[in-house]
Image (cartoon, rainbow, N blue to C red; front, side, top):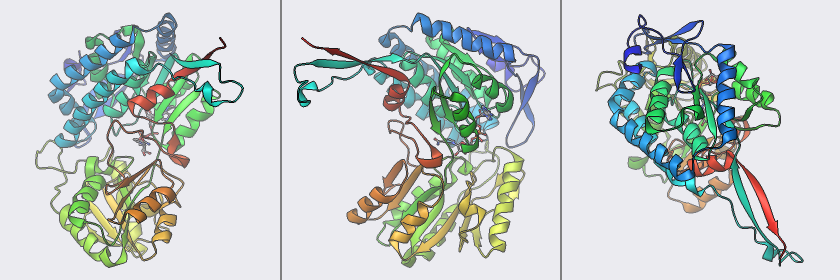
Length: 482
Ligand code: NAD
């Protein structure tokens, strides 16, 4: 089915997955190749009734209880093997519908396999803890432990920029912990999620434990928020949509992985041979469409010119264009509008006095890698999430002021610092108000085992299989007074 659906709008459209069957709807939406903007597939949007059916079916399954943890772990591991076997197909699909370069798409597949294996390891361990009553005067004779139970139906709503691994951080953790899952992938990247769902089913995930409802946020997404049998919403996407979901969730639990303006600091004693390639990679990977991409780069004044120059030299070695060309390092943005918006922000910054050292040229939906210096603090490239292949550099003399500036955005997802001075690094770790502080790494050095999540308007709750499984379970205390 998926082989046939892909590459042709003329064939029957791909639809939603409910109780193990791919179903059609009443209307379709078109998936575009992100580089050529040509249609590559028609996908049937789930109807209101199908959304209700998907939630009802997964709810029944969750009530009946999931297979044993060891069996869930086996399925997750097997899905990892199948995805590895189908690597080329996943890569082709992501290159087309997400616009990733082959290297970025392959990286996404490799990480997905790791996420599945980590989730398989954790699934049998989500059991609970012993309560140390002995520490409590007057209660020392009591005994206690906690038990963890799946919450029921977990609804995962996911963004376009990580159509496989981010989806798995939700789906694998939810099922590993014994929940049933309703997934609503981004309407920009529905095909990868269909391949993923098929791999999970082929691996032996019981069909009633997984539904995929395809469609736009303002229809299918909104309907999912009206479904009271959803126990938990795990969301990755913009802060704007996160607020809508949180409001609808009421007292139900959520996990919110939201927007970001990630900062990285380079101190005068930094090892630039190490820092420059890391910063360039963290800025331009997936054309900058990563929530932890380095957008603000603070460089201690003596190094500011050298860092900008070396980054510009590096960026010149990153050809932008067709993601199918193996030489290409920067593919397109998700839409032509996103590229035009980026172009506009870069133009505005220059009008406000910024210097564009390199890049910033637009060709269709491709923007060549851009490095800006002398960026005004009021510029949109500095103050709003760019989600594009650009980095804005500002020099600093006063370390405390640089930390205060990095903290001054509404966001707090991830930050990095390069320095050989351990006091400075640890002081920064104490004072930077972000979910992650990476020393001698950029803001974007994520490994899938990490507890990953933000503070402030970047959201709350942690991903990473160990952490997400704890989020997606209810803890019950059992005490015994012998
Ligand atoms: P988005 O918020 O536009 O969409 C995300 C998902 O929400 C999509 O599936 C969309 O269809 C759905 N949606 C939209 N409106 C909805 C509604 N009213 N009700 C329910 N669902 C709705 O985000 P995007 O453009 O796909 O992704 C980019 C954003 O995601 C950036 O802000 C980026 O920082 C963020 N992001 C954050 C992290 C993180 O870990 N914090 C990771 C990746 C991306």
